[in-house]
Amino acid sequence: MAAALTDKNGLPEERLFVVPTAEELARAAAGRIWGIVRERAAVLPRCGKTVPRVRVALSGGETPRRTYEILSAEPYRSRFPWELVHFYQVDERWVPPEDPRSNRRMLHEALLSRAPVPADRFHSVDTGLSGPEEGARRYEETLRAAFPDPPGGFPRFDAILLGIGRDGHTASLFPGAPLEEGSAWFMATAAAGDPPVRRVTLTLPAINAAAQAIFLASGKEKARALHRVLSGDPVLPASRVFPVRGKLTFLADADAASMTLSKGGIKR
Image 1 (cartoon, rainbow, N blue to C red):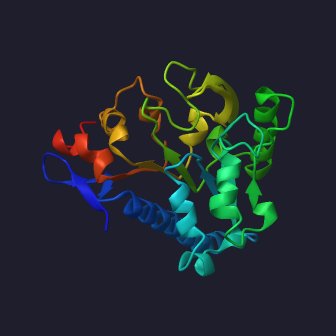
Image 2 (image 1 turned 90 degrees about the horizontal axis):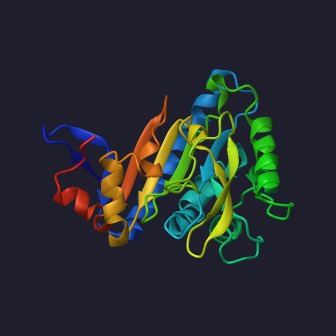
């Protein structure tokens, strides 16, 4: 059971939930995604949607891998409305799909090859194109076809699953790099990470248009970054994620939350 942090007045701090271990974190994240999808799938027919669709954007990296494996196994595997859910990538490294660093490869290994996801329900970034700029342009076309004329000008994902890097980056938005590209939904970025590699990513306004944004943080190496993000440090891109008309949730294991807990919780 995830424990919600409280603020200095003892009131519920609904944005941060802490669990003891990384395994429990993965299970809590899988349960959160399942709950969002189930609720959305139930509401859509009542909204007059003739073809209900739930849209979820998934991040790569090692932290969410176990979450995807849990979703693809029982009890979720047989209960998840796979045929209603369209999965998108939050970001991608500009590497071939068979490269071990590829987010697409990880998603295939952990989720797509294990669960009955219809082939046309996963929308991947094509890294076989001429370069990241062309890849970003083409993926934005995919998104705009899925979200025609959205209110506010940006796609409203039902859920976006995000990670936090040790440097406070999220998606492929790194400290010091431009975080917004005007009206763009998806953009190419400069080489970043270790080792550095070109990337493509959802823009900050596109992320902040989501109905639900969920951060996962695991391990002591993420403790300082998580605390800085929760304290609102504007230098860190992850601190800039705050859905305009949606909900922001942080799920962390005890190691990742250790600095926040020791310093008395969230200050922003």
